[in-house]
Image 1 (cartoon, rainbow, N blue to C red):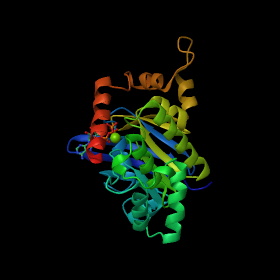
Image 2: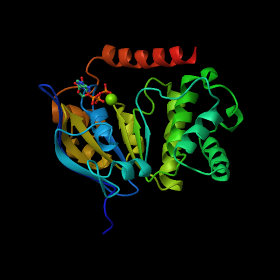
Image 3: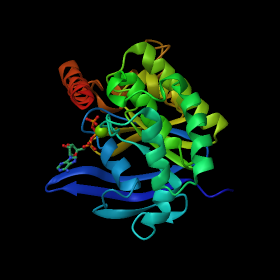
Image 4: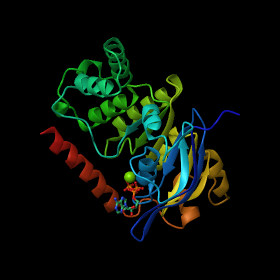
Length: 273
Ligand SMILES: Nc1ncnc2c1ncn2[C@@H]1O[C@H](COP(=O)(O)OP(=O)(O)OP(=O)(O)O)[C@@H](O)[C@H]1O
Ligand SMILES: [Mg+2]
């Protein structure tokens, strides 16, 4: 069988006396669209940061595309794309300039850059906005551009940390269709984090439900739902799965989530000024 895209063994990450990631062992196959699903503070971003070599684990090991996260960081960075939870585009450049700048950092030659910029802009339906300053994009358009940028250098694995946080329902649906398209037509292995149940359910081949840094359960959304199906609950959602395995709702407090989304939107607005 083909080697998996990602393997982790007992990954642990502590921040002082807080264990943010607690013995996480995962195997993600090439071509999978895999979801890390959990409430605020569950440890999703910390796992993404470890796998993208931004931070080191306290203990445990992992490989991404066959490369060791501690020994082969440059090789990993060449094979992955990342869209961070916090906005990271330059609003003083146009969409096209942002993409071109990123491609130069990856050493793509001019002809390849020009071709690839057109391709990824088309994928996220921003071709007609290519020469507008990012500062004039809406929040959803900026997010789409960030996703396009993550794809510029044809990564084998793409990490999307909360790709639709704070976006309206319609924009979220659009982004879902790009994510599916990338996975299917560009054959990118995708790891996304979300605390939107319906997002994980709609998009993911498999989902790991995470709480307090631990994987509670990991399987196909359909299998997870069948685990909690009963006469009283003939048609369970992933929300019911989470409730079943943790004894609590995933959205800790609605206020909390709203606060987080508002923080991100504020950040965007500030950047756009
Ligand atoms: N640099 C840091 N220093 C101290 N604590 C940290 C640091 N980064 C994360 N944490 C803590 O680790 C835990 C996991 O955080 P993480 O950002 O991974 O969660 P998350 O699942 O991504 O949450 P969210 O849905 O809010 O993005 C949280 O309790 C957080 O406060
Ligand atoms: Mg996070």
